[in-house]
Length: 113
Image (cartoon, rainbow, N blue to C red; front, top):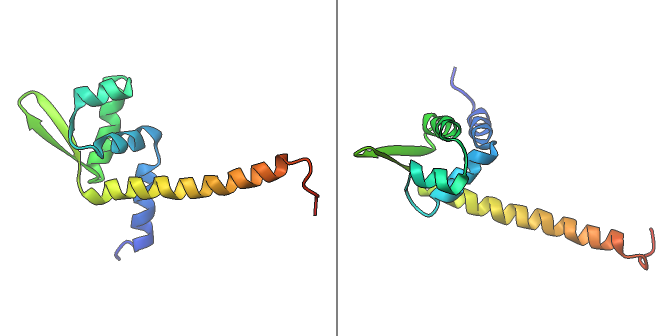
C-alpha cells in the first residue's frame, strides 16, 4: 500500500524540524559550501554537524560532492531555498499579528470589551 502524500509531507517537515538543520539550509541558500565553512558559520562540533548533514542527505534535501579531500554540500533543489523564504514570510506575518495584539494589550487607554 502506498504511503499517503500527507504522511510524506509530515516526514519532510519532521526532518526539517531541527534548528541546526534549518540553519544549514539557510546557509546553503547562498550556494554550495564545504563542510569547513559550515563549521565556521555554525560554531559547532564536527560530529554534530556530520550527524545533521547525514539526516538531510538521507532525506534527499542536500547533496554532497567531493572535491579532493573537501566535501561540499548543496541544496538538492532550488525549491528548498524558496521554502526557506516562504517560511520567513509566513513567520513575519504571524508575528506581525502578535505585535499588534501585544500593542493593544499594553495600551492602558484601550477599553476592555
